Amino acid sequence: MHGHNSKIEQHSAVPTLDFLSFPTGVLEYTALKSSTFSPQELAIMTLRMAEEVSTQVPADDFQALEDKIYRTIELYKSAQEARATAERDVKRLREQLEEREEEVEGLRRESVGLRKEREEIRARVEKMLSHIDHMTQEQAAS
Image (cartoon, rainbow, N blue to C red; front, side, top):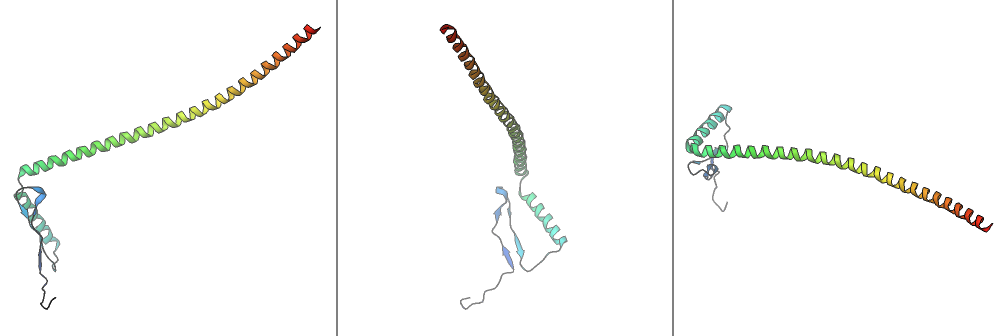
Protein backbone atom coordinates (compact mmCIF):
# COMPACT_ATOMS: atom_id res chain seq x y z
CA MET A 1 0.00 0.00 0.00
CA HIS A 2 1.27 3.54 -0.64
CA GLY A 3 3.41 2.24 -3.52
CA HIS A 4 5.51 -0.30 -1.62
CA ASN A 5 5.05 -4.02 -1.19
CA SER A 6 4.00 -5.22 2.22
CA LYS A 7 5.01 -8.71 3.17
CA ILE A 8 2.99 -10.92 5.45
CA GLU A 9 5.23 -12.13 8.22
CA GLN A 10 5.52 -15.85 8.67
CA HIS A 11 5.80 -15.60 12.48
CA SER A 12 3.61 -13.64 14.84
CA ALA A 13 5.18 -12.77 18.18
CA VAL A 14 2.92 -11.87 21.07
CA PRO A 15 4.39 -9.39 23.56
CA THR A 16 5.93 -11.14 26.52
CA LEU A 17 3.57 -11.53 29.45
CA ASP A 18 4.30 -12.08 33.10
CA PHE A 19 2.97 -15.59 33.89
CA LEU A 20 0.16 -15.34 36.46
CA SER A 21 1.77 -12.28 38.07
CA PHE A 22 4.82 -14.24 39.17
CA PRO A 23 7.95 -12.08 39.35
CA THR A 24 10.23 -14.60 37.67
CA GLY A 25 9.95 -16.01 34.19
CA VAL A 26 8.43 -14.73 31.01
CA LEU A 27 6.64 -16.85 28.45
CA GLU A 28 6.56 -16.06 24.77
CA TYR A 29 4.10 -17.39 22.26
CA THR A 30 4.93 -17.67 18.59
CA ALA A 31 3.02 -19.56 15.95
CA LEU A 32 3.46 -20.14 12.27
CA LYS A 33 0.42 -18.88 10.45
CA SER A 34 0.63 -21.38 7.62
CA SER A 35 1.66 -24.48 9.61
CA THR A 36 -0.40 -27.21 11.16
CA PHE A 37 1.04 -29.51 13.78
CA SER A 38 0.58 -33.22 14.17
CA PRO A 39 -0.82 -34.51 17.48
CA GLN A 40 2.66 -35.74 18.41
CA GLU A 41 4.21 -32.32 17.76
CA LEU A 42 1.46 -30.64 19.82
CA ALA A 43 2.04 -33.05 22.70
CA ILE A 44 5.79 -32.40 22.64
CA MET A 45 5.23 -28.62 22.55
CA THR A 46 2.81 -28.85 25.48
CA LEU A 47 5.30 -30.86 27.53
CA ARG A 48 8.10 -28.41 26.72
CA MET A 49 5.90 -25.48 27.74
CA ALA A 50 5.00 -27.18 31.04
CA GLU A 51 8.67 -27.86 31.73
CA GLU A 52 9.52 -24.24 30.93
CA VAL A 53 6.82 -22.95 33.26
CA SER A 54 7.90 -25.25 36.08
CA THR A 55 11.51 -24.06 35.78
CA GLN A 56 10.52 -20.39 35.56
CA VAL A 57 8.04 -20.26 38.46
CA PRO A 58 9.43 -20.99 41.94
CA ALA A 59 7.81 -23.72 44.06
CA ASP A 60 6.79 -21.16 46.71
CA ASP A 61 4.70 -19.31 44.15
CA PHE A 62 3.03 -22.55 43.08
CA GLN A 63 2.35 -23.35 46.73
CA ALA A 64 0.77 -19.92 47.25
CA LEU A 65 -1.34 -20.39 44.13
CA GLU A 66 -2.33 -23.89 45.22
CA ASP A 67 -3.33 -22.56 48.65
CA LYS A 68 -5.46 -19.86 47.04
CA ILE A 69 -7.15 -22.42 44.81
CA TYR A 70 -7.94 -24.71 47.76
CA ARG A 71 -9.30 -21.76 49.78
CA THR A 72 -11.46 -20.79 46.81
CA ILE A 73 -12.74 -24.37 46.51
CA GLU A 74 -13.59 -24.42 50.23
CA LEU A 75 -15.38 -21.06 49.96
CA TYR A 76 -17.32 -22.37 46.97
CA LYS A 77 -18.32 -25.53 48.86
CA SER A 78 -19.39 -23.44 51.86
CA ALA A 79 -21.44 -21.18 49.61
CA GLN A 80 -23.12 -24.21 48.00
CA GLU A 81 -23.94 -25.67 51.43
CA ALA A 82 -25.30 -22.32 52.62
CA ARG A 83 -27.42 -22.02 49.49
CA ALA A 84 -28.78 -25.56 49.92
CA THR A 85 -29.60 -24.81 53.57
CA ALA A 86 -31.30 -21.54 52.60
CA GLU A 87 -33.33 -23.31 49.91
CA ARG A 88 -34.45 -25.98 52.42
CA ASP A 89 -35.40 -23.23 54.89
CA VAL A 90 -37.36 -21.36 52.23
CA LYS A 91 -39.23 -24.55 51.28
CA ARG A 92 -40.00 -25.33 54.94
CA LEU A 93 -41.15 -21.76 55.63
CA ARG A 94 -43.37 -21.74 52.53
CA GLU A 95 -45.00 -24.97 53.67
CA GLN A 96 -45.53 -23.52 57.15
CA LEU A 97 -46.96 -20.33 55.64
CA GLU A 98 -49.38 -22.34 53.51
CA GLU A 99 -50.48 -24.35 56.58
CA ARG A 100 -51.00 -21.13 58.57
CA GLU A 101 -52.98 -19.56 55.74
CA GLU A 102 -55.24 -22.63 55.62
CA GLU A 103 -55.60 -22.49 59.40
CA VAL A 104 -56.45 -18.77 59.31
CA GLU A 105 -59.04 -19.36 56.59
CA GLY A 106 -60.62 -22.15 58.66
CA LEU A 107 -60.71 -19.92 61.76
CA ARG A 108 -62.23 -17.09 59.70
CA ARG A 109 -65.03 -19.38 58.47
CA GLU A 110 -65.60 -20.63 62.02
CA SER A 111 -65.72 -17.04 63.32
CA VAL A 112 -68.29 -16.06 60.68
CA GLY A 113 -70.38 -19.13 61.58
CA LEU A 114 -70.21 -18.33 65.31
CA ARG A 115 -71.25 -14.70 64.70
CA LYS A 116 -74.20 -15.87 62.65
CA GLU A 117 -75.19 -18.32 65.36
CA ARG A 118 -74.85 -15.60 68.03
CA GLU A 119 -77.13 -13.27 66.02
CA GLU A 120 -79.70 -16.06 65.61
CA ILE A 121 -79.60 -16.79 69.37
CA ARG A 122 -79.86 -13.07 70.16
CA ALA A 123 -82.91 -12.76 67.87
CA ARG A 124 -84.55 -15.80 69.52
CA VAL A 125 -83.83 -14.46 73.05
CA GLU A 126 -85.21 -11.02 72.10
CA LYS A 127 -88.31 -12.72 70.68
CA MET A 128 -88.79 -14.73 73.92
CA LEU A 129 -88.26 -11.58 76.05
CA SER A 130 -90.75 -9.76 73.87
CA HIS A 131 -93.31 -12.58 74.43
CA ILE A 132 -92.65 -12.54 78.18
CA ASP A 133 -92.99 -8.74 78.25
CA HIS A 134 -96.21 -8.95 76.25
CA MET A 135 -97.62 -11.64 78.61
CA THR A 136 -96.65 -9.55 81.64
CA GLN A 137 -98.42 -6.50 80.22
CA GLU A 138 -101.57 -8.58 79.53
CA GLN A 139 -101.60 -9.90 83.09
CA ALA A 140 -101.14 -6.42 84.47
CA ALA A 141 -104.01 -5.16 82.33
CA SER A 142 -106.38 -7.84 83.52
